[in-house]
Image 1 (cartoon, rainbow, N blue to C red):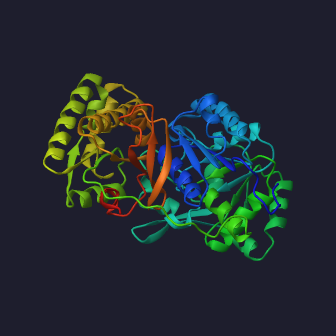
Image 2: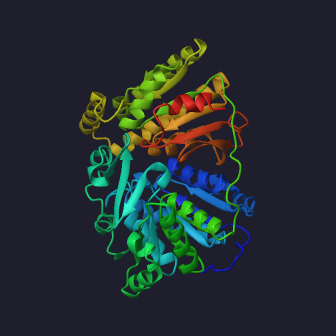
Image 3: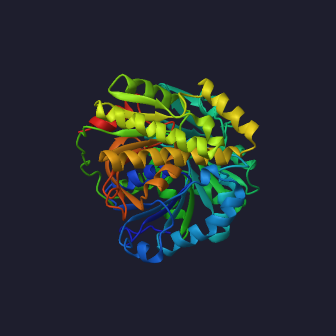
Length: 454
């Protein structure tokens, strides 16, 4: 595809994120490597997209991770056509680095099938993210938790994920439950022995539509980037995490196509922030506990009320009042729905949903929108200029309530989580600084870092 010594002009990578926090992680990698990148929070109009035709990275965030295959059949073909229209040589379907997916929801397999119909050739699969502690060896994905490495099906969070529990660490086997497309592998030993090209050619000859790629260190990262860039098609469709962008940039740097590094951007401390969280991750729970000891005011949103829109609206008003009072006392409000997977309120929520007849997806959508309404009210009423949204699915619904059109990255906060600038036609929102944090990301002091970073 691209063995020349000069990168082509115009967009290099066009990506479609299956959740909002993951989309901002892909933007972060490109932006802080010196590639101007825009992330749209909804499919842009042709006219809006044309305004950013000179950008090197163009992304569209979505809520595909929380949607069934039928939703993907309806939305992804048009989205892939729009990405292809940018002319970018790499078309990336961005997934979480813990591969959150199942046959019935967030199916990466269905996304692969739609991509295969739209784009020609083989599809690389790259999930590792070295900076976030995600590593793939012999097709199996491993992830860190509390400083320990786990095979993903034994990971304390992902093995017990409430929506997409990981029961298989071999990504090829995991995908086999979602698609009939055959999945091959280029393993790290073969890469290190210099035989990756031959193995890739053999896997393609064998009819492997998807080829999973190990990545566990800088050497294999560069090799993965080389294989995608030099052995792909004219417009190469790729599945994977932000590790896709990391691998490509590592190869471009090693080849002298881009500078080795650029100076990192900085941001200033702010006096007040507000945060909302719909995550039930134990990592987020620990972050909430730490923030509560560092000037944040924890405020519980009663999630079970999502079964009744009138009751939920009243709960939103109650929480807004409490959050406003916290700000008046010099505290930073942190509104959340649960403190980790073991919080009894998680069971109460599920029982309430089950008894009501409301679909769980509908209840979750309502909660995300409610958190967005709370944040929107606080920004407008209290003149806040920096906010945090925690939870991949929550971020999608909450940002839509803020009236944000697109995001650009300002400065790094934590691996996979940049501080972003919001773009909006609403002057109260335009220029708002916002961090979108996935449930599994960030150090224990993350919320404090967002406020105090300088």
